[in-house]
Image (cartoon, rainbow, N blue to C red):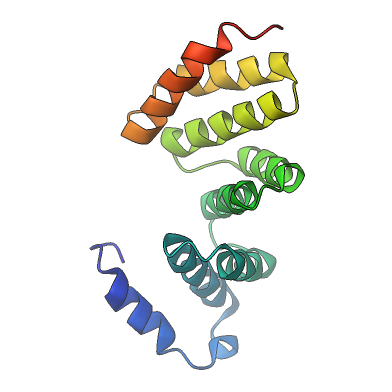
Length: 156
């Protein structure tokens, strides 16, 4: 998976016929990886199911737990369940995210959720936090530019 060979990674994961026999931390990572692969295929229902199993088992590393919660939040956004998305993303921020790019993505997602809820002061606060992290990922930088055009005209 680290080399970008997703088909090979999926083949290895599918070769595991009895995941319940894996040690608990390894089983947790197994389900998280299954969820990540399903997410790449845009199979959000399956991704959510696997990610929940991984989270329920408990993550071996706390940063991974935050990243998984962030992904669960993103899945909820895709399903248009903004209440659940907000809950997951807040938990992810609380648990801690592995790097500033993930933090910026979480803050931007919270900004858009707050805009939808018409809580403009909170939206601006999340936007400022995301921008202060100075992310370098092109998609996140682009999102910041898009929101920046709009957020100055928002009251609050």
